[in-house]
Image (cartoon, rainbow, N blue to C red; front, top):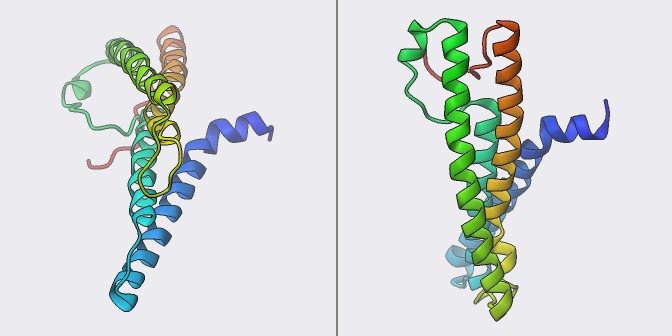
Length: 170
């Protein structure tokens, strides 16, 4: 299997794992430090906070990829394959528009932070690295939305059932 195919399949999964482990380990260390040694650090809190932010944005992109985001799909049960595909395409196009606007404005925040050289209070690291979570998340979402649109157009053209993702509840 090629590296690009593996990245396409597992990129969000591995990124989520890295940030989740970083969050849990740092939080556990900070709890032990606080409860056992009566000492805590500012940097530990920041690592947990920013890991959680990256988790949220990368998780949003993973949800778009798997069509696992929250939706009300009661109408979908009554539609045939073609109208269902058209509705999914419409939803993805709306999301593309929202993601493009959000990407633009979140990138503006990164540029402002870079221009003024803001740093985090505890880690003393450029805030650009942390603010980048939002444009990175929206860029990943856009990439996954384009993939979803191509998949849906293929389903529409071929008359095959559209990918609906795994159901959480039935």
